[in-house]
Image 1 (cartoon, rainbow, N blue to C red):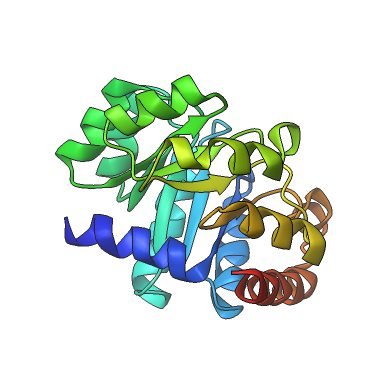
Image 2 (cartoon, rainbow, N blue to C red; image 1 turned 90 degrees about the horizontal axis):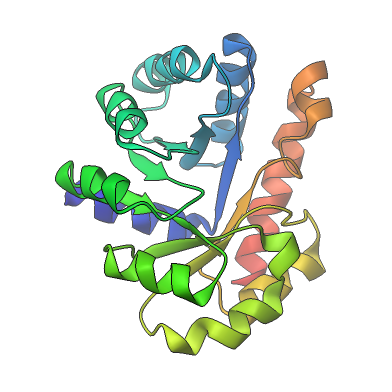
Length: 219
């Protein structure tokens, strides 16, 4: 349970969970190094392409060698076989776009944090019943901060994190925290296609520092 609690605390104290996938392993490693250098200590790599497993192993290798206090989770996990394979590869936590009781069981068996994606109160209730402590509200750009404000009181004690469309913008980030979220997930608005394709690591470093600062101010 130590890792589960440590990862949850790390996400909550950081207030922002960066997430990305890129097919090139070396670029993926450089992105993680850059995020780490900017102050990130927990992040999500997403299982969104055929290179995901090999790249994840490369990230874990760099993590053990250079960034021992970093927690790397795996996202877009929808079934037992994916969950087991990435846990075997060293995933520190599991993120899903859906609520799957089977995936929840695997995560709980390994004493890992499981963060399911939800869009409706019924899904949030199901996630809570399956032992979720932190729920990913997805897609955030469709639902908006008002959704959190409206449903938060229905689920006392449950923590919320919007994902999908959170902007690198003071007003947007402030709106989410004002609505009652505990953290925000940032993917393509932080680790942009331009950054990945053109290896703009200095820009990523500056933007990550900015994102962390905006979150600290909004929390």
